[in-house]
Image 1 (tube, rainbow, N blue to C red):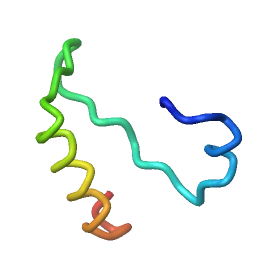
Image 2: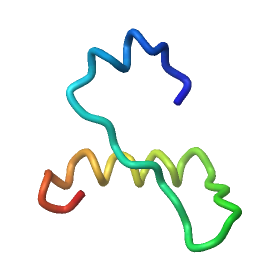
Image 3: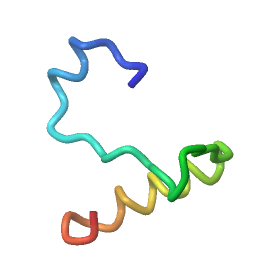
Length: 47
């Protein structure tokens, strides 16, 4: 995840990993950020 285990123990929730239909999941930083922001702003009923 790229975060220290001590920090992960303090979070309230995590977002599920972004995965695609195939084995190769390359996204540009801009695309990945857009997906993460969409999930964060969507509310719990859409995630």
